[in-house]
Length: 230
Length: 243
Image (cartoon, rainbow over all chains, first blue to last red; front, side, top):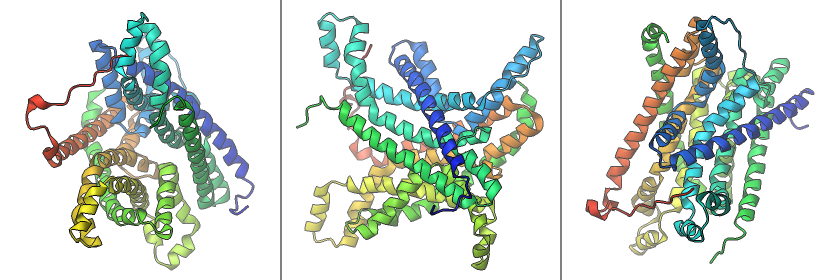
């Protein structure tokens, strides 16, 4: 081994696994929330638009770390104080994994919303009109015409959201979840070799980025295979 | 909700916001001073010049800011003696210096790529025209390419400013009393989790949208030659209704 890890390398590999798990779960949450909020923004109903607008505006204006602290420490406190008002005495502890996934999903859902909104609007109006003219209901149009293309238009933006999200998973170490950063931190405490561990951790993140970019490129080629190019 | 605690801790939170703004501002100023020359190297055709800049930008854009921060703050300890020998240890011992260094290197990396894109987006015709007028390389960059690139880069740079402003919150992890740091200390002392964190969040929100507003104003001003002359000639709305 080029860099001396004193036999703690396996810990980083374990951490990498948790990081990927948190990242992918949060991405799933973000996609669901993003689709829902984008649909709300395009729904034409005033209160839904206001709600979705508030969501994206507020989330994108507050740092991830602070939101993570609010969700992880704030939610149990809120529930407990509400319960106390009704005369119940309860202690709630959030699982760091669940809190991390929900918070990251909630934050990046706001970013995914804008991606999906753009993608929905990128579907040519003529195709939708044509589908309606063929007698498709709006639900069928959505399923057969709009959604299959939304993925194609959304893919570059979603790739960006994923790259930012996977880097943000490092913040989850603050709430004691044993992902890559925290494992590196623990290993540092045991070996007194902080530079080695954080350097290797950073290369592991870089590896995720490189692999993700390659995958994204393949996916984009695949999803654009039906597009005619001049 | 306990409003008294918000009012009594407001001065401390404002102090914290000051630290946040100070770190953001310094990192942005130093960062752009580094980024402009690096971006010029980045667009050069010589691989010996652009490759190192590319790798630097790739590393800092591809890894979390937190790992970079720890690499500098904790990592420096591993080279304590070497740093003491060259007299840099007094700097690296300070969390504030490590935070500023990391934030600067991080924002410079993003800014290099923004500027690269902008320089490459300068229309070839304008460069050819400048050359045909007999401009030297230096004059070409000073009069044509850089002013045009700055204009093209502005919206993306505005996003970077907002990104950095929010990213500074992680310096609280290495004991700096920025807005998030102050909020965490007050919460640890009073257990008023919601009141304090939400107040801090609203302060971030206000400054963020303040920055957005400033960039909108600047953009309005520098793109005013591209605005339609009359209100009636506004571009037609593209209204794609789905579902």
